[in-house]
Image (cartoon, rainbow, N blue to C red; front, side, top):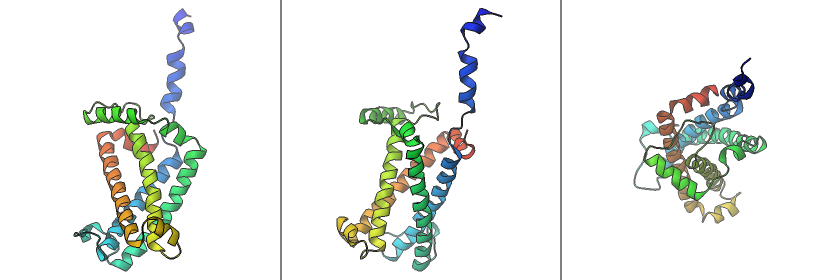
Length: 213
């Protein structure tokens, strides 16, 4: 037996577990795609509802809406809302309980975000290790979770302004809550566009979210 085999066992002992480890556990993948479907239904049905009483001087194309009319849009919106809220709450609970949020989203700092963003703009940001989120990804994921809370809160203020009158008042009233809800929706759409673009640029990330590895 050679002395090399005795003194340098690291390459043979460390590599296999890492290469066989699941990048995304099953619960993450299932909840990700459930969330994606529910979010798409909420956005498209929300645009249908918006068209019935526009906030601005434009309307969304009927081909980009869901429900066919105001009543249909509301039915789709409320149905998707329950799926999204239940799925989202379970995701947050499991994210904290399993330590995934701590491992994936912490630590995070403003200087690191600026540095990684600068590298991303110059197309120099590495995506070799999909198990590690860069600071820009951490900021986006934390941000979209917070925006999700604002979306739900403003949605409740619009849906039940009497029952949730304290929440409606906190948001500046019913009309202002509609603008807050629209802004939160716009932020989620922007995040989704960036998310999809990154998945297109790094196809192995999409594969990992489907197969887990």
